[in-house]
Length: 209
Length: 209
Image (cartoon, rainbow over all chains, first blue to last red):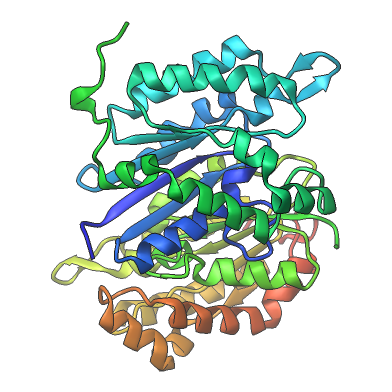
């Protein structure tokens, strides 16, 4: 086993793994794969259904503090924005684009002073708003030198994910879709680099703008 | 599927599933089993390594509030006390018995006003202190009419659990031990009754003593 790593996964229902009859989601599958490959990972799944960037901004600091002792080798993963884009009233998103980006910048800037951070981009099939959000989130992460994994294109083409969501509650996949997501995210070079701790750290973070 | 249920599982590393190469722990296994049996369960695993009753008393209310909307059919599970019994200095437990019981009563009394509560008793092979704690926790739960599942005797006899813990970090089992724990807890009548919502609720809770 390598040096023990403790990871907090912050996000929404897709991070939680809502709808997966295997009880794993993509997070559980990737954690299991890393452990079987000899990496000593402790995972805290902190995905919450319906959470927007505002909800995560309000809770991540305290929930991470309670799980990541000062002396541990910590990692932080964030994945949010899909619920921000949901329209509760016609034409009106739960969180406007500008606020989502402000929350994201505030969260990521603080998180990167604490541990290596990875952002997994949101997806929400059929929602035009997310096509506006994702490139902006990606650009923000690039400016902060935080690795970003784009999932929107993959999810839009992923047959099993779309079929399971349609057959389920309309929004969440089941085991097949979560397995496909795990394969996709785990295959991204950003995933392994981040786990290795090879990327962002407080020391080489860009100065505040 | 039955009425959707959302469950917060509060506890320590055994609730987290630390050491399980399958990434499930006993919580993930029972959630998967219930979903495959047709129950629409959303699970929030809020087990944290090294957490004592004091740590859980300090965080459970806020973490549950952020995960359980007012209108959902909620369940709360607690499992703590093993870390309280760990001696950091010779002869001195991390949390004295009297304080553990005070935390437990405070947590459980408030939790049962919010949702049906289940307590899964702690275990810590080889620790005499836990033999003093468990009967007191069980008695407290009985007084509050909260179902309690005793695991100490089972864990002490569970070969795969003890072997995996010895082969691992000395404290945590792996897939086999967690599967055995899931089978044991899931087979207790308290588990199914609690999921059905058949037991304690705020309305029939005993008056404050």
